[in-house]
Image 1 (tube, rainbow, N blue to C red):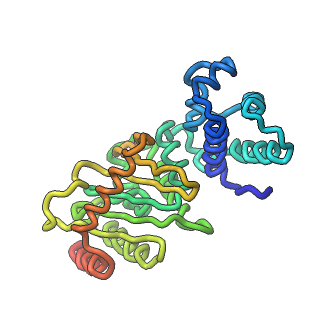
Image 2: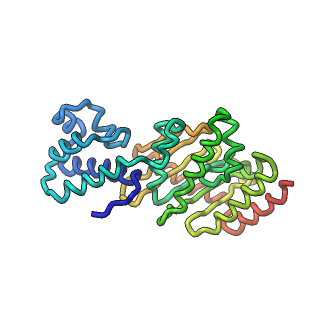
Image 3: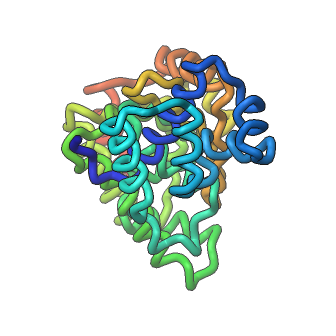
Length: 283
């Protein structure tokens, strides 16, 4: 078996595999927890990815799920081993909350992203200087350099072999607010134009004249996956505390909101022309 070197992907793969093994036997989490002598929440946390599963517990669980084929057990062990490798953000662990780490995990393994920001540009689109101007308003000065590095590393998902299809909707307010000064904004807006040339990235703009719209309630992100599992929605504050919603229907609701917003956006060449015109205003 050949596994990916991405521990983030493998962690999701392992927990989904364990959940499917349980469901294939028609067992509830309560059934398994009782049989294993575990607390009621332990299996839930394993299947949601809130905790890692030990080798001992993995073997006991897979045995209980009647996996007797040697080759399949070896495959599961290989996935588990790959999942325990350090994630790319490990060096920033002191700055990353558990919820934001979960956000990074989903983001790095998603096949499609749907992102809406109205008042500030999304972190995945920010230049280094723009990121510094934003982050310095919410974080202690000593943390800013590393948080900027973290944000830049986060954007490496666009450089991987199979980057996600990323769809962004940004508000005119985010494009006009002079974060870091005119030179920083000119560079930032030019960066958006460069990103818009990529086949896997689309950036749409909601102009002020569009009036009130659902994106005004706050930034959100919907992440979709090729593994057949449901989408995941997240909601991010200026301090990068992210609330992950995996409940059925939540992500679907925000996908619908995204599609509604698209009826009010400037797209493709029209959006690019709008951004070029804005660049001339930063003098």
